[in-house]
Length: 287
Image (cartoon, rainbow, N blue to C red):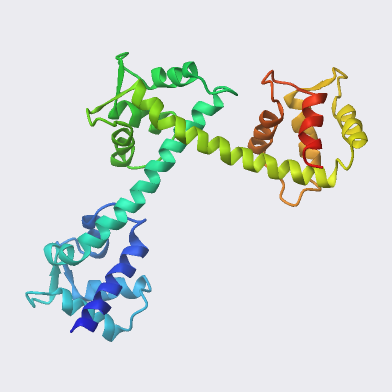
């Protein structure tokens, strides 16, 4: 008996793993199987569904599993019988799935803040906060944040997920998000993003140094070649043009977004230009 229960539980978990990304509720999964929409799952409907979705069971095993769900032995599975076995693991799986989506939403919000300035300041965060704040009050509603994530950041997630981002940021569960709570949520995430970018930039600098800048003389010669307008500094356009050329010799060509991140990493004084000393300091460190 215990072996059969473990076998049935394993099948349920396997089904949940396959379909957790295709539905958002237990009812949706039930409706996927209920082909004739009569509110009951016949043995035939369930068998067809199992076979079509290649669950990995023989017809005999499928029948054994279906019979085990049919508690009142009326040759069909009601929504209640179905939910009784599938709801607990599905709810756990949906929670895990939504938690990942909520994290992605928060990260996208912080990426937007980073895009607004090379240095993240209180005023930058306040600017984003105010752009979310539709009614001009001193706090954000969950709905205002959800609207921003959907309409401005174009995140295509169910509304309950978008609203949950507000709940995550709302530390005192007041139903509103103060600017203090907003800052407390985004600052650690921004720091994580910047650390990831720094690690990427460091690895790319090492690769460029090993393939192009073998000595101080070569660093200076390369800088002069890249400085097309002879201004003794590289603007973003000159730097990106050079990296696009270097892409041909890099093991993993880099995207324009990553090129911009590298420019920001080298531009230590944040004046929007890379002077020779910044260029030298960056690539000499890699020797």
